[in-house]
Amino acid sequence: MRFFLRRIGISLLTLFFVITIVFFIIHLIPGDPVQLMLGEGAQQGDIIKLREELGLNKPLTTQYYLFIKKLFTANLGESLVKNRTVSSLLLSRIPSTFYLAVGGMLVAILIAFPLGIYSSKKANSLFDKITTGVSVFGIAVPNFVLGPLLIMIFSIYLGLFPVSGDTSLSHFILPSLTLGTGLAAILIRIIKASLEEEKKKNYIENLKIIGMPEKELWFFHILKNAMIPIITVLALQFGALLTGTIITETVFSIQGIGTLLIESIKARDYPVVQGLIIFISSVYITTNLIADLLYMVFDPRIRKRGEN
Image 1 (cartoon, rainbow, N blue to C red):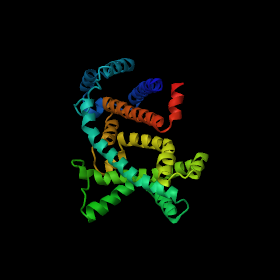
Image 2 (spheres, helix red, strand yellow):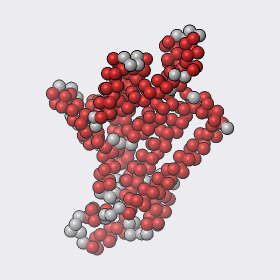
Image 3 (cartoon, one colour):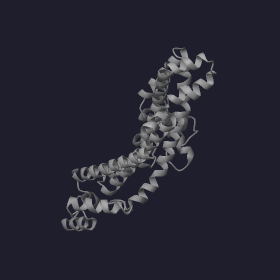
Image 4 (cartoon, one colour):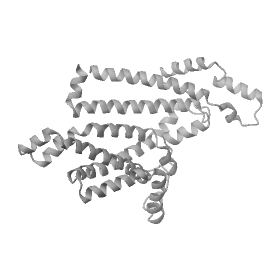
């Protein structure tokens, strides 16, 4: 519990610094959101009036104070462009990104774990060499190439899945394959390398000598003790997927977090960008906290260090 509370304290402090830095950087970027909202032909009086209504005429420190004050009441403000609250915008975009993230992660796990484990068991075999080549190819092919390729094959030629959109679960199959394939390629290499390192340890040889069955040896000892680096990669990658994969969302016209972030930055929509940064930071912090807890489950030594 002491270890967990300490991690939460560090996470909250990190989130505060991220929010502060992002607030000032966004406001210092050249460009006037009011000018973008009213257009180039807007009268100076209208610009001044709208800037006052939005509170953009106040000193930057005052704006920062008001922003932090609103955060403590769970108020992320209102969009300068879309005439909606930031919270409602986020809630409307999060489901699409969530489905995409979960789908991509499931595809990656279902591909990577069987191939990675079997490749390690059959090290230096033909299967191992083919798996290594496929994983290198998967890492090398970017999403903006794989996505259109899958659309051409499965949507245009075969007509099995929709080309774009996010109105049904069938719309997320090809995007999930696009994300999951690249992530699986990374995971296969991590899983294999971690298992190979664990196999070389002395206790494995001792368990073999006493006659432990191979399945029990692999799943309850080698795989379990090799999970720390795998969990780290899974946590970071799932955090990245949950915070929006801009390229994949753009290719498949999915209205998620990634596309909202790009739209808001282009429009200098400060409140929305700030709200998105808070969401993204919170997701990364949460996934890392979950990873820390899983470390303690798979490796009791970490739990003992946390108690000291």
